[in-house]
Image (cartoon, rainbow, N blue to C red; front, side, top):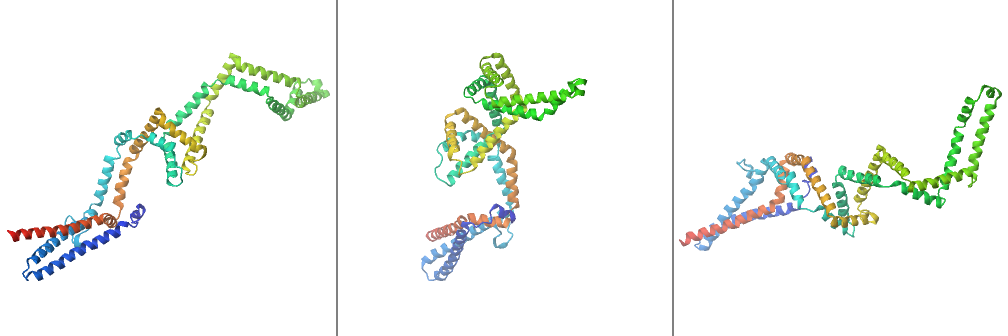
Length: 423
């Protein structure tokens, strides 16, 4: 019963009331025919031939109604509780019905070749493109549907293959990019607009801090290189102090004087570097080798992979949000994607191929599990509960069979009686 509740079979079926009403009507009609039969038998002795026809109709109607009642009842239970062979068909064959249904799903829907063949006739990418190019303007189901569609399109693409394509494209673009001239032009423009000054200031500040942090190393180096006489007289300490003070003074002068000769030399060096980056083949070759080494570094590959995953996750999160999926820049991007899907045949073919492979792969990997799930689920259902639910679902039409059997049986009885009377 717990499994029945989880599958939703214990919910109220709107057809149940209608089936009960039709059952009462069919049974009432059968009782009515019995009453008519008794009345016709009591009046037939009066000599009027009409009552003979009425009796024949009611008699045959009872036979037809009882036969159809037996047939309908035998589907779901034993008539009158008697264990008559070949009755209670559905409860006795519940497991076989589940196995048959599972086999039907497996043989007609969950075969990879069947799925692939049917999906070849379905242009998933074009349908998605049309939907995305003309998104729904209102809220509610349509927007949620568009959001789910966008997320499904993104999720249906093979992450490993598509991610490899994207990351490979990024790496190829980086390899094809001639970095040296761009760096040279950027450095030249920065020097022309004095945007290199903060860089020099930062270098000077860094030099001052480095000097302060390593002052003891300078004093130690002077002490180790000084002679015995200098150490004995203490001149090594005075020399080290003079060197350190001179360096501090140089750094301070460079920081305070924008026209300091060393700053000027540094600016001239930067200008020369900018020209070499733009026009010196040897310098450009050095930069190209350095760029190739950086791209080949595993850390850069991990960084590119992180960029792809962040972009993909961001798109999926945005697509799953029905309020944001079709709004703002992302909505415009979706519309552009829809137009591209409709116009670019190669992209559409690639996405359709991804969709087919995803569906076929899911069927190949999980088809047997789905079949077993259907079979095991039906096996786990309570037979009586399933019988009651099926009877309430199709019972209205089945009770019509009883009514029709009663009426048709009566008409056949009249026809037979008429034939006997005329012959």
